[in-house]
Length: 242
Image (cartoon, rainbow, N blue to C red):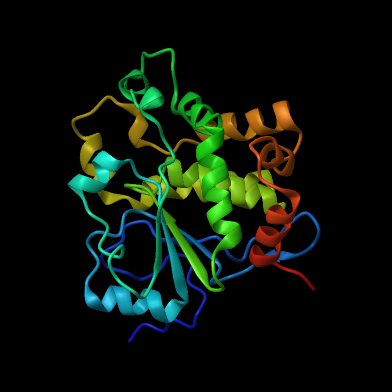
């Protein structure tokens, strides 16, 4: 029997390829991010009863689904109709930037880093997501997109950056995604597309965009309309203060 009270770097859930903790990271102020507070994940549509029981025992209370409506129709969220979780559908992408074909080819002038910057410029979407996090009930929050790499990766970067986690650790957290996603390895055999990878330069481009234009992650969140009160609530929720 898997012990849900332990601190798992990657949760031992068969129905999830890429469900990982944001806890255990050192911060610039000598603190640590809390375990059992925030989880990043691939979509949760293939969970069985044992998987769901483990998530409940792990302390998950809130689910944030970052996928588009069309994705939801193709792969419904199995947790959206259960009373065990507060479910929020909050798309982190708009039709205006969904043309991912321009990021597919290795010869393209665009990279996945450019796509991540376009995500960061979706200020209304970012504001809504962080408002949900700041107002969520006590307990663990699980957020996910389809494979848990791009939209989920950018949101994880924002949360870790807000907590004061070092740049190299944020990059390392992102890079792990490709190794966790066996479904992407299958794609690689017949694809020249670079959107399947989690190369460090992609997330570095987004990170450097934040610092160049806003100075800090907190300033970026203030610029999208998140209040200082909400930011401090998220920090208190996510950081273990001595």
